[in-house]
Image: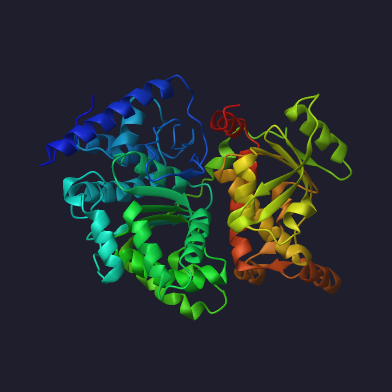
Length: 497
């Protein structure tokens, strides 16, 4: 058994020992399975009380990385083995997996992020009592009483520990690194890991519950802080004006209640909600975010999702091939099973009509799922009941169907987070589906065509949208991974298939 962190509290030492014993046991399982390659191997939602062992090998590494990366990993090995023998955490766990042959040498850019996560881990361990992280600590037994009185008398207890905001390109391993960090923390801590989509849906639901109070956001923030001091938000992105207008006040209350944030994003904080309505009201939130968090960029150019063994088994390209999709759908639900229309409950009493469903599989024409006013809440409700989606007729996206493109991006995000399986017929490859959606800077850098007629056609079909332009790379990357052998294996394990 590996050494445990020294602490003045004997109770804390016991908990750390138990945690390391769990991690040691889970390693026996992982050694018998080939590590999966992919940038995001996270669960759809991790509850605050969940202690999730390392079921999958969560770091992805290329077999052909540079000598610089190899030397960097060797340097980390020497540092960990000599001066950090009494520590635990994401960087130490990373080194342990390399030394035991579970992982190959890592990406130098990921190593930089791991050092920041290790820094945060160590600061949290040292400040566990000050930050009120341990839900069973004797000094925190009166937390419910303090929470009640704080609703009557405003208080401020900003954490002495700064959080971390990780950002970088798609597929660079941000989510995996955050999950590695999250899993190395004790199960007894008040922590939560959740996708940003889910988090904001929870916020709006709670606001509805407290409608009529003078400041419902303050009450919601106190409720969140009561359950989780460490808040890990994956895929932090702001596209909705309703979210943008409340984030500054919401996180102002959260930080005042001692919340410590760890977030991943594709965007630099200064680029969040760029070009959005009333962005001037959003700018104070960016300043607060940068003040309360260390901002670190993962500069890797490697998209690890595309290193998976991508196949073409469930992604069918062409028109008039709905018969083939229905045949595959029938094979999945069982030859003698009859799929029927069903109804799924989503948030606040709303219901979603499912075209056909049976045995955890749902069938939708694209227009019924993405050409209607649906959103993340509807898709989350759908995949609480179904683990597989057959989607017929995904079109090439452009200016004329921008709303459908936005819903499709959200749909893929929700499916990926829930490890759902996708069967679909599409007019083109994932890359070609979103080729006409570009950011403003991409549009400016495009070389003009020599023919004025060609230029006119290009402009008329081009969809210039900063948020979608940023999101499209993530969607292409995820669609690629979702059709891989590794992803489908995880899908089967997650849903006990």
